[in-house]
Length: 382
Image 1 (cartoon, rainbow, N blue to C red):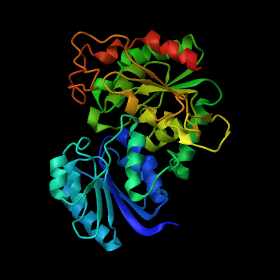
Image 2: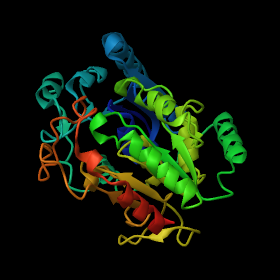
Image 3: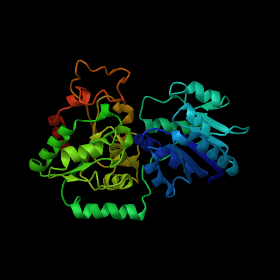
């Protein structure tokens, strides 16, 4: 039986990060009567899909309007009688969305996981810390934090409640392009951080090999509008792929439609950088035992996802690859060598240029990931 209470979750970060908390949000929804969620402006287009029955109330953390929105969220939480608040990301400023009062349960990330722990603690000195994140996947880390609320051993589900309009648009593209009628490979060309992007010319060469040598249909995908990377996907689509014969969906689809296509099995294989697209396609949900296409993991549970290849360079695939306890649906490919000027720390998995523009038009780790490596992995996957 659900608690006749509400819970507010604050998680303001990158678009791909939102994928990691979907199982946690679903778990909370199975226990609490109402779930409210605060996300960043970047995450909002995907988070709005969750309003179709997974999240009851959605708020957007926009730095230009943060104080006014935070006041609105606090007032609404008091009006609903919300007593449980969880800050999953650990950015101190987002603590403004949590009201102050007695008799509340406020959970914030452990000191080792919070980006602005001191500020978060200053805002909520009586808050309890979530357990330190394990060295495993982020999905498991977030779910483990629910133990303090008595929520344990919950099923993992990344299923999104797409509305009829999104499904209709997605299926129209599937039918028009014949995606399920032949081997179709989605190539996701962008990412929020330039240091994680595989060079566009490599994607173009790969698309040519897929079409001409492997008898596959190459489909170029990316964000039509994404300000964090200066609309890199759109510019690259126009400058590199529009004159080619490949199917290019970058300028046609919205983010919800992309999410539907990636998760619905429209593609034989999804290839891309460490980003939302790969997480959406390749993260495995728990399913019934023996379901067609499902694989049993070492933990005794059955999972199913779409086949994906993830191209990694400056980030750690151990905890930010597509979630796959079976280790069968997703394959990670990394450079065999790193350039001498690369300052990526392979022990702590820290890249000082992660998120900036240093790696644009420079020799960097993703450029060392060879097309032949990716082709070999695709042939194996197919």
